[in-house]
Each structure stands twice: as C-alpha cells, then as structure tokens.
Image 1 (spheres, rainbow, N blue to C red):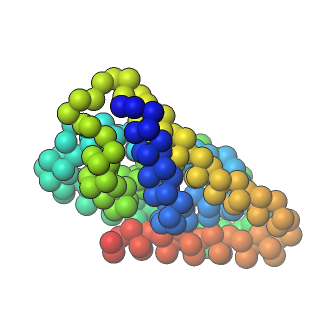
Image 2: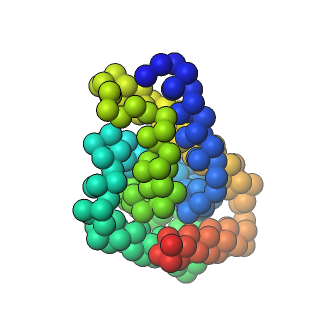
Length: 202
C-alpha cells in the first residue's frame, strides 16, 4: 500500500467514525455516568473488534459473515441486552452509590461491552464488507500493510471515540449536586437503554 492509500483509508474511517451510532451514544453516556475511565476502556474494546474485522476482511469477511451469520445475530442480541441492562441500572441507581459501583464494574466489563458493540454494529459490518475492499488491495496484502491498516483504524476510530469520551467526562465535571447526578444518571441510562433497543431492532 502507498502513502496515498493510507491517507484515503484514514479519511474514510474517520468519516465513518464521526457518524453517530449506538457505539457513540454508549461511550458518551458511559463517560457521563462514570467518568473518563469507563469510556476509555470501552474505546479499547471497540478498537479490538475493529482489528478483528480487519483480519476477517483480509481473509474474506463476506464468506465468514455468511457462515457465522447466526453467531453475529447472537452477539447482536447479547450486546443489546447488556446495553439495556446498563441503562436500567443507571435509571434505578442512587447518585452516591453509582459512582463507585459503576467504576468498579467498568474495569471488568467495559472492554467487552465495547468489543460487542462493534461486532454487532451494522455500520461496521457494511464498511468492512462493502467499502474496505475499495481502499485495500486484499489479494496483495503484506504483514506491514496489515499493521498500517490497524494503525489507521487506531488513529481514526480511537481519536474520534476518545473525543466523545472527553466531552462526556467534561460534562460530568459540571455536575456535582445529588439532584444533578440523579438527572444525569437518568439521561445516561435512557440513552444506553435506547441504544440497546436500536441495536436489537436493526
């Protein structure tokens, strides 16, 4: 791959990343409710799933998706159920107790939730099946090219998602009273639950 190919691929990934979807709403809401840490862990999970998609795309994602179609459906519903569960937990939580409880929970599950979000994201599947091959000569891939593609994904998807994490964390800093924290939890919980429903019905 040439430098121009990497630039074109980076721009395409960046444009796809900034389009709001369930993943964006989830990481922003998680950062609002729990601070930067959970959002950063979720972003790491999102990137891991992108690496998996890149490897699958190079080895023939369309064939793999057809063979494992049932598995993708299961992952989609697991992710949807998890988002809805997180949303309901925030809606029912008390502001004083949710901060520590959610922070502890984030170290155990945020990466997994981010990973499942990308795996079940139709936007990601369409990009890697339909658009990705137009930027990459898959038949002549080298290990260096694969590492370069993963670097593009890290810079494009990582920077955009961390930007959303930063905005969510900054907004959280402005909210300090129990009443505002309760409102924040309800808003974040509603967004997460709605994201879960969106994932399920797509």
